[in-house]
Image (cartoon, rainbow, N blue to C red; front, side, top):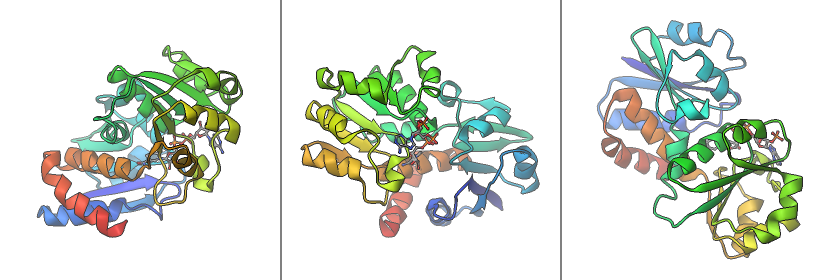
Length: 265
Ligand code: NDP
């Protein structure tokens, strides 16, 4: 039997075991997917092998640390420096990032040339990199300066939230993406007035949060923007992860995972 798991802290809310176990069952694969509360990523490598896992998903706050213990990182995860999916190949751990593609699938058919990403953590990195791969201009804004260095080092235009306030009126972004954790507590990632100015010149608002009331998207709707939450991103990243775990085409996985996802929404 193959074994998979999701590691994070907190983890009890994770819907990944339901999504993966149902889909594995429907595909007739002898495998189980469970979840582990991971307090510290120290000794993770030993833990992963001692549990006999074939693959795992990694979530908050370990994505960057686990990238550092991978034997090899493939695809866009190399640029992001964070992994959300790892696969065992013999005695090696291979890291991937399916958050980036999971996000992009939400917007691939939309006309977007300029994007503003709010936040500078792991998910902001994934989003900025995948947007750049598709030739979309990306500006990053964050509450504090420290995490902006990753982006300025890679030639992204960056602002602190205070500086963004000064330029908000004169800039047009086709999409504004809230990749901060602000919506976990249903607070806005920026001052109300600044957000209103930005929304006046924009078409789409995206918040990575799912399954929760969200002030950011409510304000976007009041300003007649198309509003997208993170639920499909979660679904699409899981489809891509399972495809890597069991080496199966995403199209075979999609109908089963979409079905169970709708049921548990
Ligand atoms: P990180 O902890 O790596 O980064 C959080 C970022 O949010 C930092 O830039 C931080 O700023 C900023 N921030 C936190 N609180 C506030 C606030 N109140 N106001 C303004 N800025 C704030 O988190 P991740 O990037 O990994 O995740 C961000 C969010 O995205 C989480 O809520 C997570 O659950 C969600 N997510 C959803 C996914 C999905 O599939 N839908 C996938 C991945 C993530 P500072 O640097 O100043 O501390």
